[in-house]
Image (cartoon, rainbow, N blue to C red; front, side, top):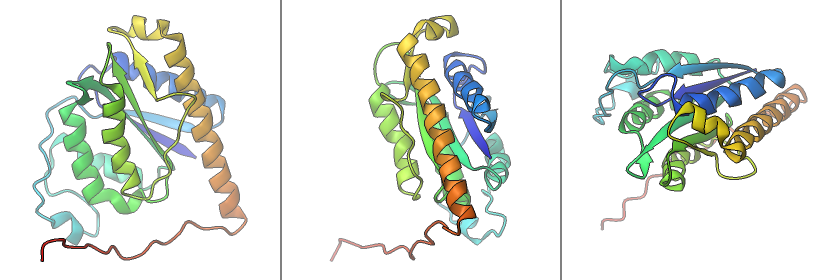
Length: 209
């Protein structure tokens, strides 16, 4: 079993990475493989709503920048997903939002029923609003949202300060334990013949009459 962790900070080894590294280390202790991918090294253009990805058997985005398609390819063999982001103006990093817009639009079929979690890093505030924004990507795609013993956040202005946030670091460890438990439960169910719901064809109501 494998969990893909997306580091949405422009700072490859900054505060967000520090939090995700704690999660990854705890996942490994639970026998779960993990991979951290830095998705904010360069600007990522937003989704244009062209719909081309819906006609692509490979489930790829028509735009080739930002490594979105490379991550979508990884999702096919991924069992769980964790998205990490710094807080900018009480919201996730804009690059993260553009990346997730395109990733979920093109690669959603690889994500349904896979456990997911958001992790945010802030100096002070804006964390819960940022968590809410990221979690909505999961809930629109039938992904079980994994929780911890508090909201999945760390505080600090540097990686060293993040590591001093004892509550935040514990939250990351507990999150990893919860993700590991859920993945193992899903695998046990699969071996017992219990499969994920197939879902229904989406009904889209137009409220304009």
